[in-house]
Image (cartoon, rainbow, N blue to C red; front, side):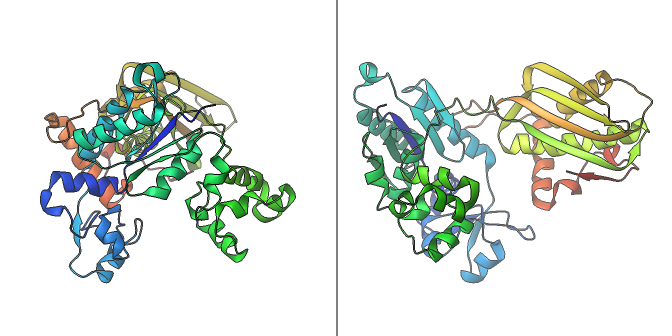
Length: 393
């Protein structure tokens, strides 16, 4: 296998897009978050804010305490979707397979394109330059034999640069790198590694099979193999074919009333739909599984010719699926809702001239923004206020 897999990483993606939208933010200390929300988190931070000790995921109040007068910019999800679509469109000109992980992270496989575009490293450099010219964003680019090594390559150079790891050099490249750069090494594993005195990826690569299992459990050998640069995952076409958004709800006591059952279904649609839209996705298929008190399960699915994301559209399809699931005169114990056949909602690649939203879209965005700020259960349809008590699983 040749070194043909590219990882694109736009560090501080949200903050970078906000600085493009408002030139006054360029070079300033600011974070992206919901300024008026209680217990709000820092969604992203500018490079200067990170240098001042601000970290993504920390509480917004803690960030303000650390830096008095810190500017907080509300997130612009439509702009992020447009920027991500632009990155994907640029990459798609060079590779038949583009895996768009959103948030400024993309993988592509240049394998077999040498006769069209020349050496892979030249294509990677051109992609980097085109992203800078067309989107105004500065990506870090890694080129390697597999996704894992390409990703470590971008992490080792961020916030900017181009890394080439030739086939056969994976272990040598990884060995001196900080072990925290290895995908899969979270806070818990970091603490274990520090206690063992491991600071570099190469140290983990030398651990034996039995020792790995004793220290890290059953996943230890896989983590050790990653430290050696082994990764069999192929670049997938966006991962969307495999992804499913699911919600499950169990009644505290089995229910027979159809209005209470539909109220519970609407709550599932509200929650699943919110995740769908905040991920900039639409669903081409909705499935409903109804579990009855006698253990019987009925399932119904509805596919649509046009992928849906709006709540009103999803409710209509969910109602149709509920009708198809049958009308047994037996109490219902649980409902499961699945959204599949997912696809990106935005093909618009102009960052600064998004299409004018319809009235229904503006209303949906206002509802979603309220739910994201105050909680999904704080705003819902009146029909979703059923009498039955239930718990989400």
